[in-house]
Image (spheres, rainbow, N blue to C red):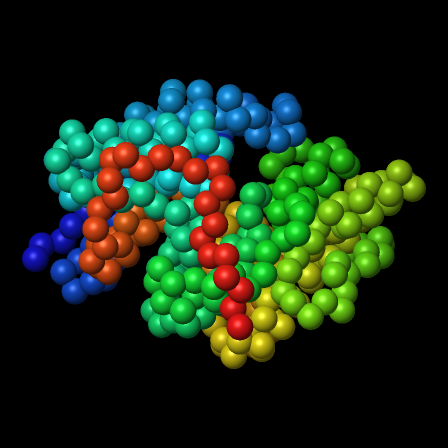
Length: 335
């Protein structure tokens, strides 16, 4: 069997992503291209405007696809399969990539695979190292904060999740509060380098819980009160980041100890945060992060998901598959 090329499309939120991976005869996978158009129109609103996101995807997806093919040195005729995110995400945005991917697969006469966005994030990190399940996977981004026990590819148990805001959402809101701009994650991280992380005392969320859930609404409220009390923006950013990172790392470490998993995959946009990476590096766990360009939403992670489906012998998805705003990857708590 010759190498096969899988195209992946992700338009779940405000990034138009198209990636291409090469699936080799022996089962190895290499990312050949990963083009992402990050929308800037939302900065003036301090958050993603769904209708504007959908329009931007429609306007940009052709160019992003052409760029990905050029980077990979391929043509449409070289593709062997197409994968696209079907959920979760913004329905209007999802529909752009999903319909585009289905139409492309039909026109090329190749199989189509509907991909789960969160599974794509897990595969994005797992592609960086040779991993054998079981292991834990923390998906932490602007829309998600979920902790999974990965028993096998496609077999997941939900260990913990946020009870309110996602971690990245909290970063965005605090950054907007203190005037640091959007997106909030990079802005908070940069400001934190200039601030005192101990200047504002944040109470640990869900202290004493027996489970492994997360909560960021209390930190967000505490940040608002500190801001009103006159806390310096850089100090507030550093203190908030320290508190958010601490709850993510400490909860994940407890889960790893409880499940006996020595390896943790950490993926999603917040996984790019330097403080988070440094904190996980001090835990003694084997922690795997996505490679460059694979932290935030992208098409390569969806192509990797498609490659995994092919290697597992999974049947292609029907072209009738629809977009799902809410699509749990796992709902049963690990015991």
